[in-house]
Image (cartoon, rainbow, N blue to C red):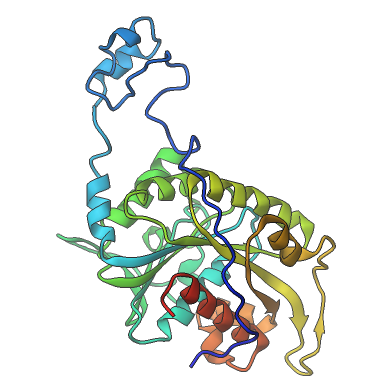
Amino acid sequence: MIALQRPLPSPSPLPLEPSSTVLPSTVPENAPEHCPGVESSQAGKADACDGCPNQAVCAEGPKGPDPDLPLIRERMKAVKRKVLVLSGKGGVGKSTFSAGLSWALAADEDCQTGIMDVDICGPSIPLLMGLSQSTIHTSASGWSPAYALDNLAVMSIGFLLPSSSDAVIWRGPKKNGLIKQFLKDVEWGDLDYMVVDTPPGTSDEHLSIVQYLKEAGIDGAVLVTTPQEVALQDVRKEIDFCRKVGIPILGLVENMSGFVCPSCKGESQIFAPTTGGAEAMGKELGIEVLGKVPLDPRIGMTCDQGLSFLDEYPESPATVAYLDIVQRIRELLGDA
């Protein structure tokens, strides 16, 4: 039984624009006008290639699309819904929300859920899910994810590091390669939902996940912000990114939206929404606010312990807000 904090509004329109120039192109920036593209069998050989500075490299390089894309598409066929959790700003509680969303979905024992952590340089999902001591096992059919519950699979680079204090100092290509492995080589099995926790910004990890899931399809993105303008400013960039690469925006979540005292239940504003917070931005940009999650100091405590806040403190206003948001996401995806 899902607890509701407020009546559910009708869905807001999801503005989509065509897939974009933001995704990696097969045509180099300094190529001539009629370049056939680096994946073409005519790369480096066509008449248009004469005089191009890339001609020798294109003629020698491998041709054709990425051979791993069909393998990713085949693996992802077993995943019904793929939801990205995004935010242009760091420190807004994106990973905490991703973990809470996963716990809430997996509370239904019939709902097979997975969470994939693509924050390569700052993986926090293993700690949040109570799996900081877990390791990954490999077999002939791929990597086996760790399990927080029987129906909650988890994958993160954190499982591959010798120590949680070890820094991951990688450039883009290595990050992209690992994300590809998470999609192609992990035995996710049949999933109803895959939640993808991303790092801040709109960089390598974001472009990779969009490119690799282009054929399999991304069902939508949830954008997490806090009430103050310094966070909203970066979330606007993330909204622009989603629209340019064609990711449907399910809605906004305003995290740390006021502080609720666990004793008296009184609420006060810690981060003042000086410009109107997520509500005002949502109205401005035509995006629904899925919900507002108030601060509760017990959220941080349960995260450090790797426990589900929703199970530990079901009476908290933050728990009710989480459940309300999950219900709304289900409705928008047509699963409620």
